[in-house]
Amino acid sequence: MPKNAGSKHNTPVAERSAGQPASIRDVARLAGVSISSVSRALNPGTGKVSAATRLRVVRAAEELRYSPNHFGRALRSQNTNTYAFVLSSIQNNLYSAVAWELERRISEMGAGMLIYTSNEDSATQDRCLEDAVSRQVAGLFFMCAVESDLLKPTVERGNCVFINRRVTSVPDVPFVGIDDEAAAREFFATAARRIDGRIAIVHGPQSSDTSAKRLRGFLDIARELGCDIPEDAVVGSDLSIESGYTAASKLFGSQSFDAVFCGNDQIAYGVYRRCRELGLQVPNDVSLFGFDDNPLNEWLAPWLSTVRVPYAAFAAASLDTMKTLNQGKSAPGRILPYDLVLK
Image (cartoon, rainbow, N blue to C red):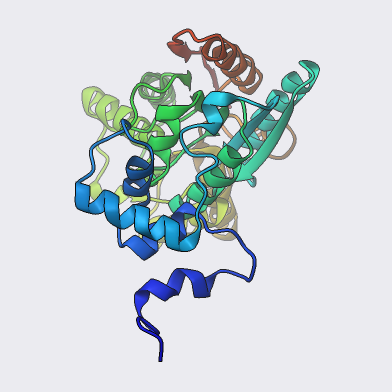
């Protein structure tokens, strides 16, 4: 049996299809280090890495015949007139509307846009970034980015814009969005004047900077106004219809509420479905409050009160920010206005 047969060092090679080029993930697995460590080791001057780690990475790259034709160089070279848009969920019509508007504007420039979906998953996002950067895109737009191994190395080496969600580990990336905490405070304070009864909150994942700020805004203003929201009336949810439905099933299992504030409109749709199953009329029996003003609301959810975010302005401001970055200038990003839609 050849030396090292069956060892972990053969795993990356075995997992790849015949003829498939090695990826940075393969190198990381073979060297036994993180993807970001591989990036630093193969791109001197981009971060600290021990001599032993660098040697292990270089040997793994040589063994796999890995050619880092993208990382650290592709984004800077900007050899194409193509941009990449990484959105967290194609099922959210707000995100799709931003993608559509951004692609339309980029097309008018004579450029193109690649669209990727991360599904709120870090490994999936890394695969998107690896592919996008290897294509030497002129810049990356993120609609609700998540923390991942390749995120920080990518944004440190190329022009990137965050839309609708910041990522705390890379605070210097230009951000285009609204002041979510201020919007949540104003929304709750305005709506609370119309509510006489028990209030519940179904919030998004606290790993999301946007969801965390919305929840903080709701809870802070509720305390200031003297609104009693019991701990078991605050339930977490993913940013999806299905998860909103599950959260509502938990909330209404043994108690009733007169109003439910939701972390986004998708969650509110799921809460609405469960309310209807329980025979509750919206908004007569229960008032529902969402966030984002999904473009479908006008047609399918006229009962939903929400915070309207300007998706067309998101696209325009994001593209203007990217143009500034591509000129070699710093871009602070943009905080855009929002509107309250009360039913």
